[in-house]
Image 1 (cartoon, rainbow, N blue to C red):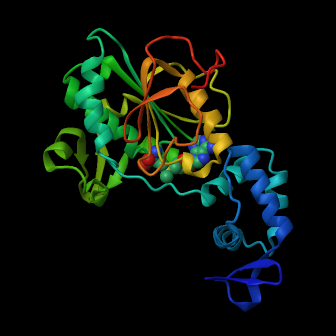
Image 2 (image 1 turned 90 degrees about the vertical axis):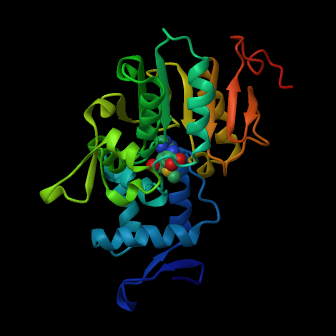
Image 3 (image 1 turned 30 degrees about the vertical axis):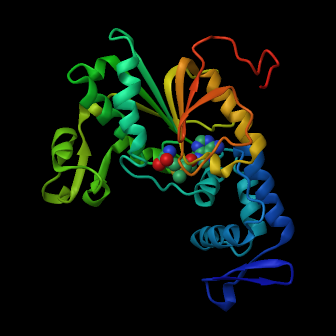
Length: 299
Ligand SMILES: C[S@@+](CC[C@H](N)C(=O)[O-])C[C@H]1O[C@@H](n2cnc3c(N)ncnc32)[C@H](O)[C@@H]1O
């Protein structure tokens, strides 16, 4: 638990002698850094920031938020900043999370593509890999043999820590509780001996997914165009202005007629965009190539 104390928030957990106070100016500095660098809006979240960064300070054996922030500022490699965003956001994810999107991909999107078309899907904010691998499993099941040559998935996240887990593609058995045994047999290798209790995503499936670090606030000049973009459960961190700019830039990365899938707890209500609502958390770009927003029309 954390307590408010004379304008500062106290991060508890280290005993009275090592109580860490997050002062208002330090909190404001964290907010500014997270917003400017990653678009993350922490307004009103003093308690969360004090608790999560307090834990980090204890790990690093630092005695004040001031020294921590100075360390982050001086680290030219950017690693400390990445570690900071990592503790301030959640990486919660699961295989086939929000299953309706995977059903829609299989039943509607994939059959609408030309059989000769190369399929490109982007899992933007992929966390530890469960989302892009669920996309790959769906593609293999729907397209059969040849899915690996016909389809590719770009999976990106800001956190190098979760990307390492994703690239390994090795998970504990309980991560697959949402998958049938048949599906597990088809797509996973079961570990034995020292690896007992672990499962590895098969090599053919891993070869369909390429993982890269990408900050969604940075420019997408190096990113190609996609028929489908999954950008789920990350926009909750952004304010409306940032969401609007991101949705517009993601729309630019969609092929005409392409789909943007967002988290079911998220909404584009109040966000000006150029997409057509299809069904919950599912939006489609017009098949015409010119954007109405860019032509200056917003209705
Ligand atoms: C809750 S997870 C969502 C994972 C997956 N999309 C899902 O729905 O299960 C949110 C992810 O967004 C990432 N993230 C937060 N801010 C980001 C940014 N500015 N650019 C890229 N990724 C970001 C976090 O590192 C985290 O892994």
